[in-house]
Image 1 (tube, one colour):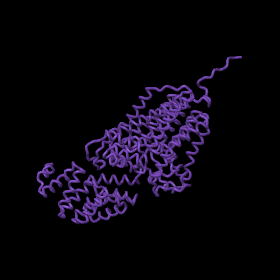
Image 2 (cartoon, rainbow, N blue to C red):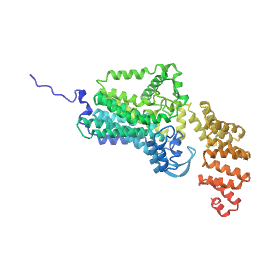
Image 3 (tube, one colour):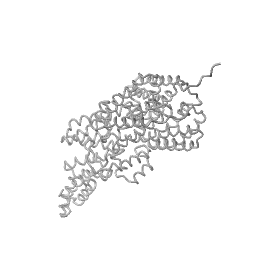
Image 4 (spheres, rainbow, N blue to C red):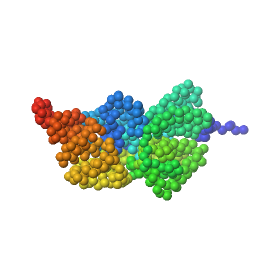
Length: 601
């Protein structure tokens, strides 16, 4: 009898002794350094980028909780929801960055706003988070596949795919990046806890507790992290070979940790009728979203922030009833081959699971604009990376590796180019319209930039287009009125300001605009009433205070006028026009010495 054959490393590993249950593969410092370098190179254009007129005002540079920054204001994020979301940790992180971003008040022409925060530190933090997430992705993949090459391929797909650019280049999505950081940390600790338990290490319970805490931190940055227990369950069963009983118990404990935060967020979130869908339509909406993402994964071009794929627009086409077949077919194919390619099966499951909260199966706020968005795919790219890496390694060919390298270079070039659209607000807005001409906010904001450049005729075209797309847009109505004022068509402007007030009674800018017209036409009582209405809503609005001061002075109410000018200068100390008006008012009441301090400017 011959000697028994020795089991070689090329033979398949048994289910009871899965790859990650064995001795781990040490990380490569060169791989980690390469990942850091490629992210820095690809996103180099983001370092010098500014704010964009797409929620950066709401979340950062005009966020009343960050301007001015105080511990009391930060505490309010933990006590109350903000903008329909309870994600206090994300806003606390933004507040921490704001400590290093404080600058003297200055006018930023690209967003037509006076700001006291620099965009630079926020972009630096975004790239830092993406680097950290890429490294965590590499470590997670390495623990799952026990091979440096597929782990590196997976993390490069995650780092370089153009669908990631929106999350990294958009300051407002620091919320998603920070959530992903804690989520990836939680998954890494979860896998380590399983490995520790298999080695009878005493650290296993502590690692599980730490993983659960990080999952809760992730939820406090973005509620989409609610799927983390499901992802852990998949890793448990597919990659680690853990029994159903132990996997299910761990997953249920994880759900108990994250579900309360999801319930809180759901209770404060606003859902708009325009984004609603019937229950039986939602699987078709989800199928359309998955097919859309698969298409963008393969051909990542014409990427934008709003695609207009609302439930209504999707269900108005017959093809929406068929698109679900493609992702379902791919999942079935992956399921059938799960024994031979378990990592590809796991990657497929992770890709879909990380998207679940935003597929439209459960309605969410942004569906009023679109069910799909690039930023929703951020963590799903780990699943894509696992599938790509598993397929490339399975081919076992130098040609496959070279082809993968070439694809990664193409992805890097596309991402570098895509990042350029975020470097300047005007370029961002124009690109948004180039991708989807039916985005109301982009037309309105381009119109605002044209108005700043004294190109009112061109601006009016964009404001009218914005109102065609969103007839109840108070901001566009107000801006259209301002454009007409610039053309000296005052009587035509008044109805637009009134319409803006009708659409949004708390929109102080419309009251302010209407008051300014009444002031120009010397209707002083009406001007005072409108400006006072604006200041009841926004007591520190400097322009309204200055105009109110002028109206009071013209009507002989000198004391009231002086008080209004003083408040205007207090709100904007560096504005020369407001200082001059205050100086003249002080002269008028005989306070010459005080007046010189303002007229001397």
